[in-house]
Length: 291
Image (cartoon, rainbow, N blue to C red):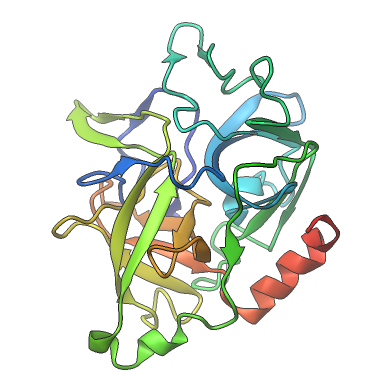
């Protein structure tokens, strides 16, 4: 399975190998000043060393929703700690020499005056059971991060009710099939040899529904296409980012999960559904006291 699909988490490097699969927030994306509760989240190992970055969104002052493969440490356990920045341009001043954004502190610290307002830390997280795509297509790709500092004033995303997307299985031509995505992934897809540049800023775009019940979705994920017309998509670093439906709402129906290995950040994206009763029950079980 590793040879055909890959998660959309991304490492710290400004220049990222183009071999990383998936779809891209390219084409007609825009800077996202609307979803202020969506943040750039970095994960660290037991030594405090940076491991990878993803996207996460506030469901409550201390509750961040992300992808399961983001909280996963790749060895059957969890990453030790995390840090999240909610600035729209959280990593736009990243310096490849210092490997640091001195304006925000990404990826090493919260800049002075931002801890508990625009930045927060965590040493508690959960994983719904993601295990290197085991059980595909039900890959359990949902994670929760509990923040040490409450973040207020940025708004919150809301979880859609169970089976919100099911009506789209019928009479699709008479219903709105447009979704909105947001995240901090690769945003400039022009190739430089075998590489692509990452801006590390929050961008948003719209996608349209491709499939809910194919062999790669089977009711557990949704497949969206962001390449046509004025639509955009997601890419490495957007993992865990929200998929909103209706497109003009803050209601989350899925999180960014994976893309095809040869998509070159130009193909369809797959998003693990959060509008399923068992997923909602799990989220409430691990984060309920923090809501």
